[in-house]
Length: 102
Image (cartoon, rainbow, N blue to C red; front, side, top):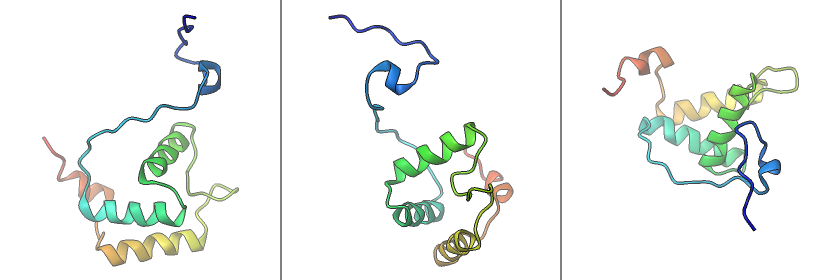
């Protein structure tokens, strides 16, 4: 039986299955990856699942780490700051952008 082609706006359920994950090659700042892995471990998720959650939350106008009121809890902020300190992430997004790959 031929499978119906899904429209771009169709949900995963309408398409008829779970999301298909692929392996991608990306270059990320080494210390930041360590922080991201720490956060994913805290959430009992893989790094890929964490990235999916962050991106989907962002395109839906949300924050993957926010509480029900849309804010970071003091505990979440402290966990992030602790991981940044342990792994030496002492730069801002603006500073990181100064070193964009060409």
